Image (cartoon, rainbow, N blue to C red):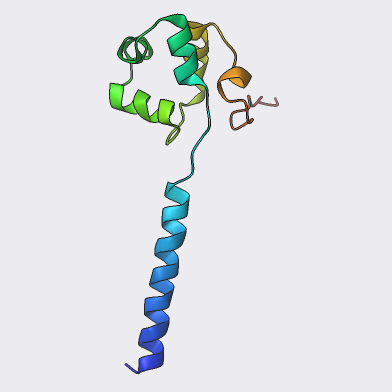
Length: 99
């Protein structure tokens, strides 16, 4: 294998890693933590009510992941709030099925 091909492969791999890390660092801004604190609840109690593991719920709060639609609806009921309040930047919008 000549030097140019090897260099091109290494460069492509480095660019792939950079792109992968950027995708991994994407955060979903939310106000879940604020609403839990204002309601006087504990994160582990809310996680138990949603029937999800505490670690998974912690990822929602930190913004590294987001709940599915059913879980989000349940969370809104528990915290007595709306989707728009929990995700003010519009990262979560309700979708309707057209029949």
